[in-house]
Length: 501
Image (cartoon, one colour):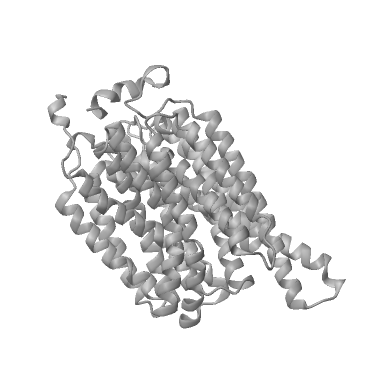
């Protein structure tokens, strides 16, 4: 294809604004509802047993359908999928904000997950095909990485403000202006390259197997949290997930046009990104959950003050992503950014294992959050870029979907696994110290903090493991140009004329 046909779109930086806005909306929604959940539960009379479904309904739909959404983006076109995803997400958010009962709210959350699964991979794959020059790609992915990394913490802040000063329903309604602005901007300025479509027929068996497999996996971890790891339903769901996902791999090896071409995940570097990123998100989501409860229940922070307490972490993520990751990505190999980034984040996590019932925010929590933010921001940025670097344009949607899938499944696993660990440690501490005398309320708080600290220790270990995987698996050179030399696979070399300018 002639080089002239591949000139960069002059409106690509304007397009980045609207892509970033859409990504922020999706990431916000993963945490913004958490703070509003107690108020929504009281208002709608949601039972304690059904409360978890407000989170789980979204996670199941989003995590289960991401690969399908990525393939749809490759088939329909990323811009069209992006706009459809925004419109559907806005309608689902309006339905959630207007919910009159539990069923209506849960249905709205599931619909948000469905359209989020279209929107998220379309947004990332648009970046992958619009920004291909090394330095520009670094800047674009630096901004995107900061949004992806810091959006969850911003959701806690915004959720606190909206819940405390307006109403829990505004945690849904706030998505509507985001979606309208992003959709209008997308229609006006986004122009994706025409040569990147994958017009092969949709792999229906693959869609059914991977969707049911991922839903089973996410739901298994959710049931483990509530029913225990040895419950028959939990074990059955894990077995079903293993069988379905194994069958999916077999099908993808033999069908002519697979939903997920195995070349995408069997690439050593992309596989390392997916695995290390998923592990890192396990630790990070656990931290959000425990620190939110710690600040509100133990230190008696208000919802707004709890959100503000996370601001240094957001600032650290933005700094790590845009000032460290983006500046060094074209000169430093990804593993030399990702592994140290995860290790710096683990040091922040190590500091936070020392929390007590009367810990000082400036002396203990603040440095832990800053290090977490700097480390994760530095690691996320090259990870996001490497996950789609060198991939053939026709595979950009599914490669992008795999990034989101690793994060979403990691988040679901992290919430369930670490919550179970924290609850067990809390119960054990309470039982061991029940006869020690003292105030029952003080003992309850001490037990809770011990549970949180134990879970954060696990998060620390998981982040160290993520650093080890990133350093061991990822062996490509810096992203200062198209894949080259010994680090490039045959497919990467074939893709160079398409991706390079």
